[in-house]
Image 1 (cartoon, rainbow, N blue to C red):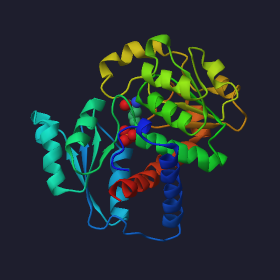
Image 2: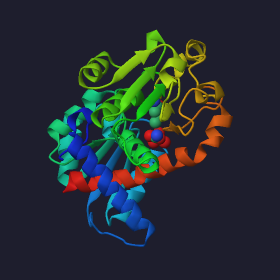
Image 3: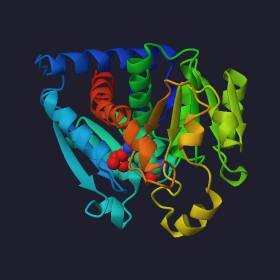
Length: 300
Ligand code: CP
Ligand code: NVA
């Protein structure tokens, strides 16, 4: 695997290989078995948006595999002053071994990968969040033992998380049900692809989507970069919440998932969040394990 730009680019076999390696690395780490698989490798991490999990899990993951990570805020890089991404890609390729980038436009990540001679990993764009969804798939598999045939429900904004979950869910044989307001549907091409390639449904009705779900997932109503819309979105998304009424129609052992950060009493109630905190923080932990697997596969 050269790059990780979006899940649409990965085959089921590549996804499964990443999840299997992540499981192995997690097990070994917990049993004191250390690896130097990325000895002397350096990852540059470009951030044009805030991050807790992505930054810390990539950085810690690189160190745990014997490598180094550089935190490159766009406020400090020349990219923030208008240096073209094409030039940034070619310069960084002369210094380091891989780039992780969190930014706004998916095209910027694709351009970076086109001009870089080193692997590029998407650490979130407005369009998708592949590293998060690989950690989510790992977590569901950990709890349920399988992915194919399970029902994954997403409730909330049709944003980067929705797009990535639809693709990841369908590719691994899950039934994917999405409930968003009509004005905030996921990407049209993603929905069309999902309908043609698996069991995908979209509805405005939260309870219909949640019925018999094995896992219910939500995310913030206003993503990074949408701060100005936050007040309007609080009105538009009312009811698009994981709460006791939603949990009453899912399977009784349904998991609750959230990529975090969470806004309690908006997309999820504090009660449901705390009742499912183990799953949600296992999911956060798995970011590190799955990203170590992604790094090994990309740097191979
Ligand atoms: N879920 C996630 O990507 O979190 P951060 O924004 O903290 O990186
Ligand atoms: N949809 C959120 C995800 C954060 C991990 C955002 O883009 O801000």
